[in-house]
Length: 259
Image 1 (tube, rainbow, N blue to C red):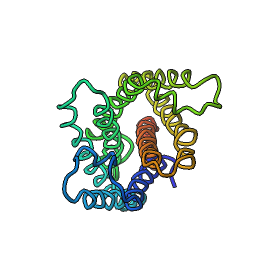
Image 2 (image 1 turned 45 degrees about the horizontal axis):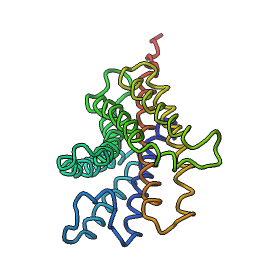
Image 3 (image 1 turned 45 degrees about the vertical axis):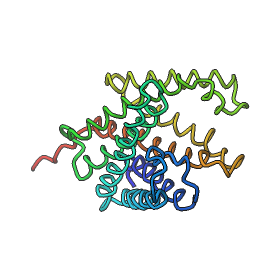
């Protein structure tokens, strides 16, 4: 397995986790991906359909022969989940939570879009327009991650394990600053690869330090499980961005000269 395949594989695992949790969980009240639909008829059926789509996409993206189909599938479903937040934003434009959810789903669209548009193409040359759009979209989403943490800074601090020095609020502020710096680097192109790698490492750190322990402390809380899947998928998307930038920086192989 090529090192630059790891991002899409982690991203696919996040989609698989979404699917498994949807099938395993019977109470869909507060299920964030379909929450904007409200209490529509046959809500559980819609949840299971979304689970099947994410399971298919997450599995398909793991293999080179089907990765493009899997990425296209996940691009479509995560785009739908993102668009579902637009009515909530229109109704409460000054409340940041719907905006945050829109851009969290959009960050997944970004990763899937990069994979779907670069599969089967060489790393050299001008990257496809869709891949560049996915990269730019992730940079914009990183701005949202910054604003989201600012809007709920105390709540963000409460997620930080108390045993990590020097304190919860320190890390809440520090990670907010790190997201802001990453957004500047990604959108300006200055040290973008380093920023993408460090952002990936930070989000993976969230997975191990924040989200993985939470189901053990309260296994009956849906958000503790959903947060693991969401964070894993976003980590995969950030990793895809880093892989994309790494490929662009790779030297173009030169054909052997004829003798």
